[in-house]
Amino acid sequence: MKFAEVRSSLPPVPAADDNRHVLRDVPHSREANALMFQVPEEGLAGFVYFWVTREGMAGTAAYIFGPSIGEPILERFDATPVSPEMDYHDWKVDGLTAKVGAPHQHLDFAFSGKRVKITAHYEASHPVYAFSSHKDGCPPYYADDRTEQHGVLTGELVVDGKRIALNHFMQRDHSWGPRVWGLNQHYKWFHATTHSASVHFFEMQSFGKVLVRGFVAKDGRMEEIVGLDYDFEFDETMYHKSFDVVVTDAAGRKTDIKCQVYARIEFDADPMIYLKEGATTLVMDGEDGTGWCEFCWNRNYFDFAKNFAAQYS
Image (cartoon, rainbow, N blue to C red; front, side, top):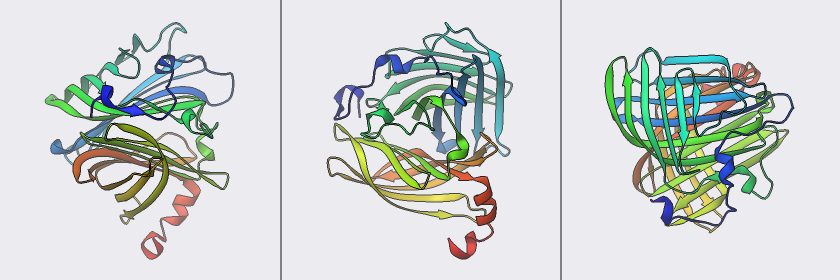
């Protein structure tokens, strides 16, 4: 799938939304970028996460984990003041540099920590998806808006001196505005990428409602998701280990995806929730690929429910 060959039925996303935003003066306001990648043949996955608060305090983290790693590796830089003028065309914070090229198409970034180093180029495979393109917009407690996109990551990853060539799928998430984590009863943040297709959905459960945002990009067309039919399997710790879903989009197409989690980590984002991250291998409409499946749980519910998971789930 090539960016220029994909036509979207959704409203175009402004080029300015691939840059830093002026954040509103409201509680929990921040801007964040998550770059997720999977290297299953090496038994690892990872993500680079960088953020900035309304007060101009920035941070960066790189996570590398998987069956070949042993204990997950976290390299993190917190609370660095940055200039209001610095933007994503030349972002430099501690161990990270990031430079947006053509908006929503190209991103170059590098991370340098004690054990992890990454030098990489991202090339988008399809137009970017914005939650604001949905008829009901972006839920305001998740962000003012957020964008999701898939593409190919090339470059090099160095872990404890071992050099790994990158030519793998990457999922790119960008959000800005309030992030009130404690309002999540539960959510599923899902990505699936192959050479021919990309699927993303975010199913959110808050205030007694179930909300879904997401897209399917395949066969030269990008469409909004209108239906999900899924099943998943837990292990004994109530951590998801498989996820199968049939996605229906606005064009009436059905996309069948079967995922296996091969690498996992818990991301400590907020004291109100648990984030259970799972990097996956998958088969989408008969084609092999990789992806990501993040489950968010309210801590009180999870701590109680996990004692009954083997009996009822």
